Image (tube, rainbow, N blue to C red; front, top):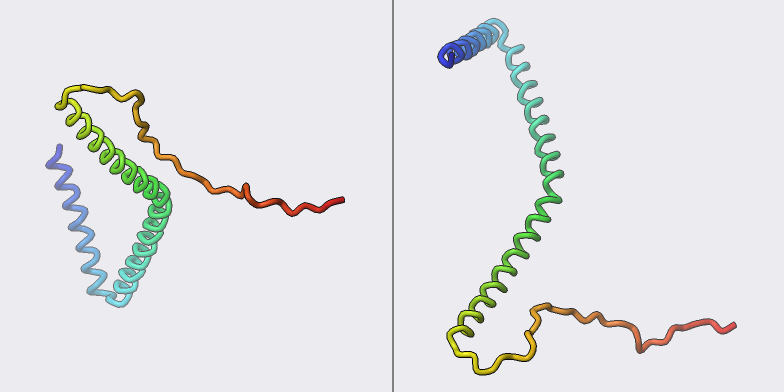
Length: 122
């Protein structure tokens, strides 16, 4: 089955080459115009596809970059934590800390508590 399919495809290509050759021999200007139009059409189609694919993957690409950055930070943090755990296990526990330190990083947002609002008095 596979060999017959290969022969059929080869025959189609042979007939296409024969047709292109005869067109090139009999009417070279018309042949060149058709080839040029085909290349322009293919270029416009390819550019349109690239534009659409780039546009649709741009958002997911940004999300992917953010995810990879977060994963790298997480791996670093886990590596540090595992290093601390391994060093703590090698030393005997003489004192246990009363409270675990939290690894949450908090950010202070500056407010405007010192400023008084300029209100109109009625």
